[in-house]
Length: 214
Image (tube, rainbow, N blue to C red; front, top):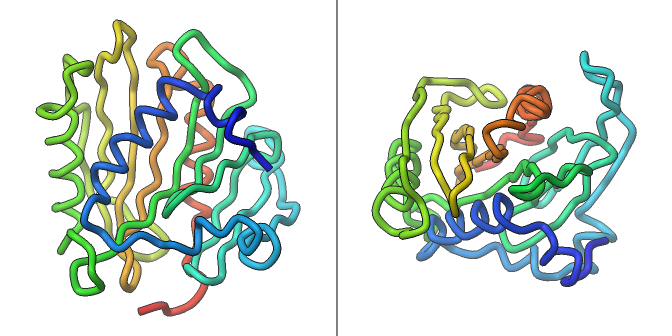
């Protein structure tokens, strides 16, 4: 598993994505179980081989029974578990950093969190980009549309922005399942976005809520 030194190498998109999501979850109930690495790695964290996607990539499943989800990701990507989020990191590093796919869990307001709805999560994300980070400019919403995630009605947002002089494209889908909002976020330098866009689509389609969790 990843050490702190390894985590620090995955700068720009991963770090920025994590910072934005950390702002989103301020006031939410933190999922303390994610801090207990030995527990995750021994009982909550399960990997198994999965069939190859249409691109020929070999996918593996990350399953967490405690928080009711399973998601597929390329087996050659690195996995970094953190508080209330799991980040999957591409093997290739670019000038603007590694391409990342992050699964974030946000507690709903009726379970001690901040957000009442998917729209609340999307709106807060845009506020953070446009008003609360001086290093971000030229934020543009490419599209916002309704989308299903594991049978739950959600929203998908695609945005572009400039960060430290580099252009990034980011896509995220937000849906509610029981007491949590699930956010799947894909971030890449714009010129490299399409290189792993199929990974986002595949992972989104193969995200599963395991039980009828409420």
